[in-house]
Length: 475
Ligand SMILES: *[C@@H]1O[C@H](CO)[C@@H](O)[C@H](O)[C@H]1NC(C)=O
Ligand SMILES: *[C@@H]1O[C@H](CO)[C@@H](O)[C@H](O)[C@H]1NC(C)=O
Ligand SMILES: *[C@@H]1O[C@H](CO)[C@@H](O)[C@H](O)[C@H]1NC(C)=O
Ligand SMILES: *[C@@H]1O[C@H](CO)[C@@H](O)[C@H](O)[C@H]1NC(C)=O
Image 1: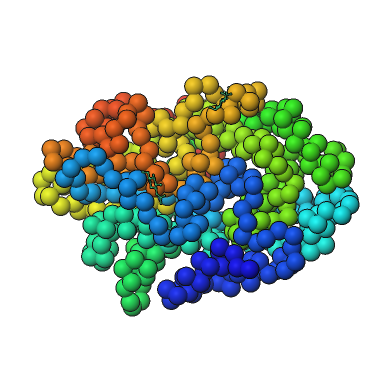
Image 2: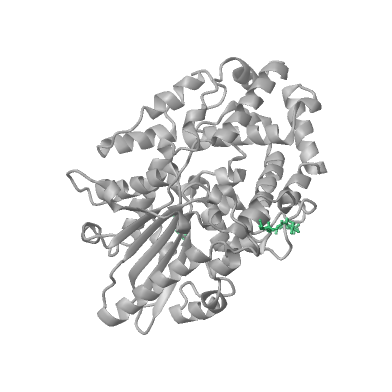
């Protein structure tokens, strides 16, 4: 039986793309007689947080990876034409980082040594047939599925906005591609360009993708360049105390007990970190290989909700509303965005043509989350804490929904009859601006909405620390 990933790879082969031997490597290796069917979706797949597959937020892509829902994006205004688009996109599906790979190996060892196989097929498979093939050298790198995420996203955006994504705009350097210097981001940006050139425009001849890339960590990895964030949050053990506390709460203990019982092992053999590693192992197998891994059997949906909350707590306190500096660290990207929109609106008014119709910016979940919170999206009335898991069942802040792999925030500036309007899409679906029901507010009212940030939000002032002596590492 052929998995979805295999079918997609074949589609790419038909397009003349060189595809890694993905199907054989991904599925056959797992043992043909697995008691799960490769390609099945784990019941817990919608709770993987930042390790979620993009298809979980856009399920129609499972059947047609290039499908675009035009009715969803149609504006209720006449005579609007898109004149500029800026997309901030997270890299595609990636392998675990070295730090996580170490945890996966620890988990594997504990399960091999301690778990008793009492005849469950999935546990037998983990113990006797499943192979640990996550090695340090794949540290956070893009997976073939991650390239596919970006190639396909490029084609869909180009189909949606054909007047902006033209081969002429590309050839004449009127499209910009700005990326973080992490290899997974550069590789994603390159795949995006290949998607446009080879799949959408079907241009022949050599393609020098490198020539089109601009690297800019100040913009795409602003969180590393904001001292106040690094010192007050990243290097501050108490800043994430809610995340640590949650690991000691009843909800987490219940998950540990249930997993210990499924593995027929002692509660004391497990830790919250090992449980988290197993949850992510299930997510990696699914996102990277489209395999419903035997590891997924360790959890039911209730467990997954608890683990998802643990991940959301971390994103909340480290990247968004938990500390104001998390949001403020994204001021450079915020201003960059509005400068582009300003320039495009001005070009459009004066010359009826825009110098740079398209900007593609590739970064991280850690790029998107601070920007989204700075702009007021997904703010729940009550903060997420270690104590209010039950109360937060219906929270809007769910990173599984907001920042899966290849998640994207797209600003489209339209020239309409009397004014310019901005349409905002998150993961290719309309995202209403806070306290606005207009699917595309006029640009000047958007500038009013964010007036305070546009006037201030000075990264130098927000991020500077008083009496900050340069450490040796910085000299
Ligand atoms: C497209 O979006 C509309 C909502 O505007 C929805 O009703 C429809 O089912 C969607 N079509 C597909 C194929 O997803
Ligand atoms: C660390 O975080 C705590 C809790 O948010 C905060 O009160 C404290 O000021 C922070 N410490 C530093 C050095 O920033
Ligand atoms: C969450 O929403 C559901 C459905 O609307 C509702 O029944 C439930 O009471 C809500 N839970 C909380 C904690 O607000
Ligand atoms: C900065 O360096 C000076 C001189 O070495 C020292 O007296 C001062 O305490 C340092 N300040 C901080 C905040 O570390």
